[in-house]
Length: 412
Image: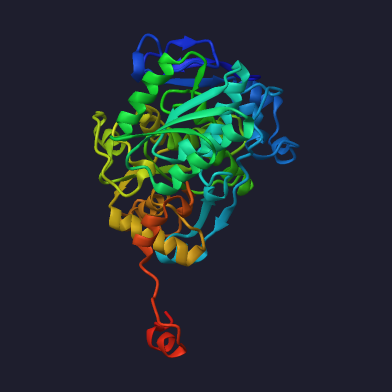
């Protein structure tokens, strides 16, 4: 790890060596989430952003100076990154913003942004010689890990809640994972995974809430947005929020790029939570944290006990950003609008980000001339049942042209 200095607790500030198996701060316990601390002065003096553009490494590995892995260390063959940043002028007009792009993470190897974190997790597991990697997930982190492990010849053990979408569970099984569908909440699945990993020597811990390295993979999504826009960052970046890892990573990406002098300003981050699963948004507003519910169709952000709430709150505040809340009906409408105006198929958690942008424009948080990038964190193919709920049923007709004529709706 060329530029990693150490790990640092977000609560007490104690530092620890950057062990590949580190999880939380021994002094603070489970709440003592660790941050990877880089030598930014060395990066700014030794690295050039043009080298990133012309790197022979593909995907997220082009960002090696800002990643907590050995430059010449083992990597899994599944390659996330380089997802498209899709211009969305019709959606921008509909929502009332100046310019809009969608970072379509549905194009990742297993169709979600979580592939970025799992690539780091598998690299760290290979680094220590682990043969089994385990995690708990609402679905996307699980399927990304299962796919990455299958490609690398590792075993994956997955704990998902009973609400996990059928498409995501199908991915796990196809990739050969050992799947425990816990008849309870995501918090129950997380607790069981933690206990199982503690009992099984040699399992690598891919729990993104407590493994400090995984959020560094997620930040590559933000790094790519800056690169895709030729280092001219938008006014706002919108991210849906569950456990807090993804938004913390993406916010950190821009903070780091500004610190090393590769961009001239940091965009404001809008975090979006479902109204039925809002623990981090409430902590942001009140500066007090309490566990919340998991009542939303957006299973990817249905997290009642988010582990990375401190990182999420701290980093969004550091960008001058804020939070907004959206209902399930607003999520469904955003899924329809996104698909029909851009051709991007968003799962509910990703649709929540578009719904949050729409809400923020109505609330006057985001202005009519502002430029915005929205992170579409996963493909709608992950949860077809919810997509059909949002889009409506097909027209059922008898096999005659007369029936088609009678049922054909007018053009919009």
